[in-house]
Image 1 (cartoon, helix red, strand yellow):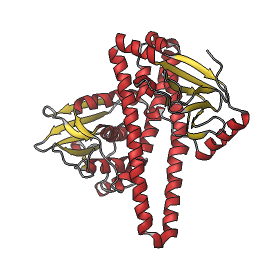
Image 2 (cartoon, rainbow, N blue to C red):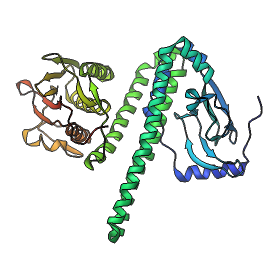
Image 3 (cartoon, rainbow, N blue to C red):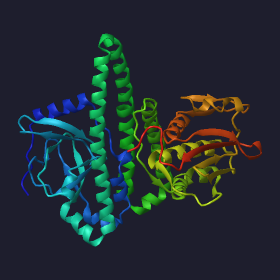
Amino acid sequence: MTTPTRLTQEQIEQLRNLDAFTGHSEAAAAHSPLFKQLASIDRTLLKQIIEICNYQPGEVIFTEGAPGDAMYLIRAGRLAVIKGDLDAPTPIGFRGPGEVVGEMALLEDAPRSATLVTLEPLSLLRIRRDDFRALLNHHPPVAMNIMATLSERLRASDNTLSANAQQSKQLSQQVVQLRGEREQLLEIQRVRQETSDLIIHDLRNPLGGIHSALQLLNMLLPETVLQENEELLTLADLSCRRMQRLIDSLLDVAKMEEHTIKLNLRQIELLPLLEQIAKQQSFALRTRNIELLITHTAPAPPVLADEERLERVIINLLDNAIKYTPQGGRVTVEIAPQTDAIILSVIDTGPGIPADQRERIFERFTQVTDNHPRLRGFGLGLTFCKLTIEAHGGRIWIEPGPNNIGSRFMFTLPRRQQVAMGEE
């Protein structure tokens, strides 16, 4: 194996300065189905396809035009993606822990489209194409799942580029229309940019790093250590997911209020989705000794919905129900099919919500007080629920629970292919 080409210290510092100027890219591990797929593989099989590689600052991992023979997952450190001659490189991006690079090497036998250079001590997990093809022959389901996740990642990148192009076009039209109000437009853009930077860089980056570290620990720590610390790792993972849902909801609320969001609609079976969510909530339920019941008055037909956003709606409602149900209480999820819609209810046995405040809790950052000594805060979660259900063509409301105990959150999902904000 030949010694890797190395950049000069001056070139490394130039790239590091550009990295600091542009801000770290958003960590992908918080939403990485590829990490989830690898973490689910048998450990013996995982060792056969993954190789740990370490690099020092300035080393070139591979060069533009070189044959592509492996994909890399960043375990620790940062790297630069550059094009052109190494004497005058043009950076096109920077990557950090939890992100994937070189994935096209698993899907096609084509030259590399860019050069990767390390900016700091770097540890990578390498999957070679030959090992992946052997995995495809001997364990087709596992390999096909990995290929599916890579396909989803590439599709997401394409959607992002299309969305950016559309957003750029809309902003250009607004600039022409509001040319006479240039100062006002610049102020709006400044505030929105600062808000976006706060969400994406100041919140998502550290959260993505934490989630990435947890995923890697689950992949690499011995089984005995994982078992001894299972409760702590579970709590950390649930906290990361909760924070990620909050960030996603904040971004989605802004898009839905501007009617710029597109729903990824498909036929969803509600019962399997609810059972999956119940497993995610098992730790909180067990900790508070709360029973969760899922009931339905008739066989539940599929609904046309955006599964990821619908899942977040149900999780938000369950989080509130569990939070305000006393120790040893019960939370019930009911499915009631109607002629042209399905009604889903989340019922708690908590303090309930006064009738005069049942509408305003769907407003942003609302806290509702009642006769009980503690505040019932709903923040942004119910705003997201309301806008998402309305985007699906349904509605959401609150009623008292059975025997006037607790609250019953109810929403409808139409069984017809009609939504308020469009579909993909």
